[in-house]
Length: 337
Ligand code: SAH
Ligand code: AVI
Image 1 (tube, protein in one colour):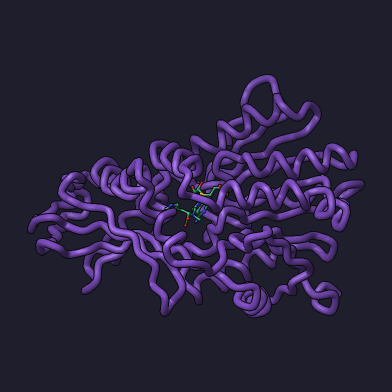
Image 2 (tube, protein in one colour):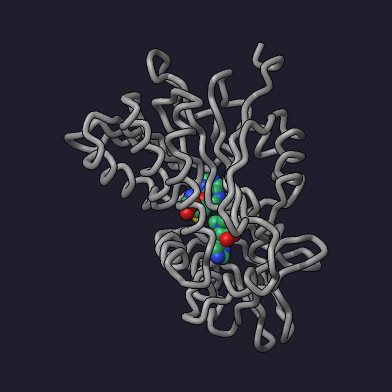
């Protein structure tokens, strides 16, 4: 737990040796499956977070700018509906979108605290340091942790005026979970919501496959670099000997499942040693490792996932071209008692 000097900032870290074991266990499972795969949360070391920020600036990657525009249009309304003074952001990344909601809370006179939670320590610390300067009087309580495992460690809402809380999961990150796990994650998040709190959930929408595929195959090759960064993470964290340039980036839209798959394809046969696991993994030429799914949604799919997680859709916002959706969800009044 590190209080940073001279500011109302606290950063708690729940990732340590424990996290390395989680990565090791995921790799042991994922690389011994008949169809190899790894969870996308392992992309996000400091370099991965930086590359993601660069992806957001690519002309083909429409989700970030579209969601930002929706939030700019709707932030005042979202804050009015909740009277919230606190923003808990899960998978916060660079916190650019948080600023839009924090600005609306400041304008409403309710702003008290921002709680960014992310697996990436570098982004939580950077967000804490910059936001505390940019929002004088606002407390920042960063949490370095995994929202699949560490939600119990999120600081409780502090009550009082502006004590209601907005919990945000933006960017379409919920789409990076397969359908069943996704509902489980949403159910855990539902457990954080008080009767007046709201979840703001960002979801990328089903659309022309060409538009989607372009977003994951940017011409500058940033997404390819982001994808290959996973192999650098494994080399560093688990003493593996992947040669990242022997793997090519593959991203395509699966129309049946309505999700994007990112994969890394071995361009030649290779035998990789994962030193810390004493595990040798063989890749045939052309063999693929799935590194991410990114589900695309309809309003109906979002409502069904929320309902399965014990939440109800309160409001649905989208852009004119219906590229991206942002929902407000709440615990149903009966459940909130
Ligand atoms: N919310 C930002 C960033 C999206 S990128 C935006 O909308 O642009 C996804 C972010 O979620 C990354 O910062 C990554 O580190 C974080 N993340 C992914 N899986 C996570 C998990 N299981 N727990 C906590 N953070 C996670
Ligand atoms: C964080 N997540 C929602 C991004 C997405 O679009 O699924 C990650 C990403 N992968 C490739 N480009 C961006």
